[in-house]
Image (tube, rainbow, N blue to C red; front, side, top):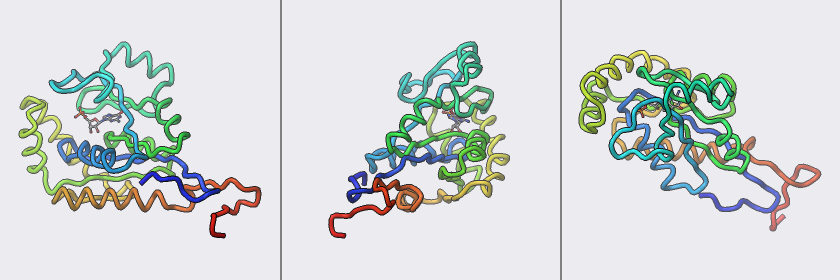
Length: 214
Ligand code: 5GP
């Protein structure tokens, strides 16, 4: 998936933002892309949310306290930041910029406010909304994953309808009724976006790439 294109062509990196309500399975989409495409990297956000069992600092999130978060936010470290379900989350800008400059597809699993804030500034990115079959399906997933207590689950479900109403502001919507089908759709979107004319640079003075067979 990440093999070098023909001589003269260089692939440009870009952002892929995956949003949707809590419990819709956003992490599965990121993990699937990371496993199947060597040209993808995941941006690791900073958060004030407490670390859950099984999470690793620096891999799942950078877990920091509010004071440290505010300091980083004031220092302009974040591409976007938002308060989500009562906790602060932010996307470190340096990592995203460096990875894009290196030609990578940078995956952001972030909430709707954050996704749309980035879209306003970077419309060239790819914005995918993962839509659940129902709010009940979110409840079932949130309960099954046993990561949050009942109060936190209710808070997340309470926020879901407001988040779901914003799906039209994204470029793509993927209905997550059947996970394998939805994963295949997201892969197809990324593959097609990779092939967009605007996502290649050419390195000849005339702007015409020199292919070996030309
Ligand atoms: P969780 O606490 O379940 O890991 O994530 C809660 C919500 O915060 C999810 O919707 C997740 O996508 C979102 N989120 C994670 N990182 C960021 C970030 O850097 N910015 C924003 N705006 N949302 C984030």
